[in-house]
Structures are given as C-alpha cells and as structure tokens.
Image (cartoon, rainbow, N blue to C red; front, side):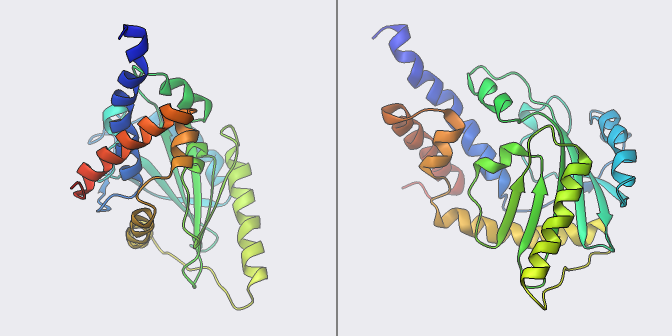
Length: 252
C-alpha cells in the first residue's frame, strides 16, 4: 500500500483520541475548579477577559469571579490557560461566562474544520435554570452546536461573531418566551458563582448519563465534525468508540 493510500487511516488514528477527549471534556466525572488570578494563572489571556468586561457590565451583568475549571482536560491543545470570567445578572437569574479559546496547530485537517465551525476566539455563554429543571442556554460557542443535547436542555448557538449584546439580549428574550409559555414557571436565583458551579456539577451528572444512553457519541456528530461519510466515517466511528470504551472503562 502506498503512503497516499494509507494517509486516511493515519489521520483517523491521529484524530480519534482528540475527538474522544473533547467529548469527555464536555461531561467530566467531576466538576472541580479553583479561583483564578493573574499571579496564579499567568498564562491565561487576561487582556481578552478585561477587554470584554466593560461591554458585559454595560448590559447589566455584574462581575463576580474568575475561575479555572481544573477538571476540564483540554488545556493540552491550548496556547493559554483557559480561565472563565463569571457574571451574574437580572437578580441572579442569569449566569454568564466569558472565556477565550485559542488552539495550538493540529497536524490534521481538523484544524480547518474547527476553525470553520468557530472553535477559536472569544465566547460568551448565558444560562438560566428554571424551577422544573429545564436549562435555557444561549451562546456564540458555535462549536457546541455539534453535540446533541438532552430534552431538558434548550440551547441556542448564535453565529461565532455575535456580539455580547446579541447573546445577552437573545437570552433574555428566550427566558421571557419560556416563562410566558409555562404559567407558574420561574427562574432559579443564584447569589454567587460558587452556587452556579455547584448547580452545574449536578447538571453535568445528568448530561453524562444522557451521553451514556447515546453510546457517548452519535454517527451524525462524527459526520459533522469530520466532514466524512461512507467507509471513512465508518472507520472513524470505530476508532472513536474504541477510544471512548478505554477511557470510560467499558472496553471488553
């Protein structure tokens, strides 16, 4: 077999571990975090965090904390330490996270795939939990739209270049729509980032159980991520599922 003929398999072997790791990073077994500050996380992109802060505060959000999610194991491909800047708004019914993703160069065409899908840059995510357990989430984290969501998560992903005002404004409208459509429903109020993170930890367990029911990943998700189909997609699916089975301890 020529080098050209073997290239697709080589690419699959190279990228399957990364896809599996990224998926498991979405639903880690733990939700651990530590306070973040320039003195302890000097490699974080503090300039980007500071640049957007006035714009978010002008929208009625109040800065609350900076944290590093230490249980999210994706830093190996990042140029900088990922730090989440946390805001609360509308009486604590909206939690907003601001962060920046800057990936290192990958030795595979997925670099272009993820760039096209908006995997790098400034991200603003807003969340509101309703008292029936429903989560309403709005963001410009376009890449997150690849993954299927459980029925109790109502997520909307705006274009990657959506301004903070667009994300926050759209989220407020969506909350009003959900509450109006369900008389008696109300948004849960959080008083601090620590409370928000504890609620997120509980939701992550629910998300992880949902992923388990899917077999962790779907063929449609892999097709969107890779842009492949047919035999090539079959090979990728087998390789990713093998990686997931080892990582989750379900391998035969």
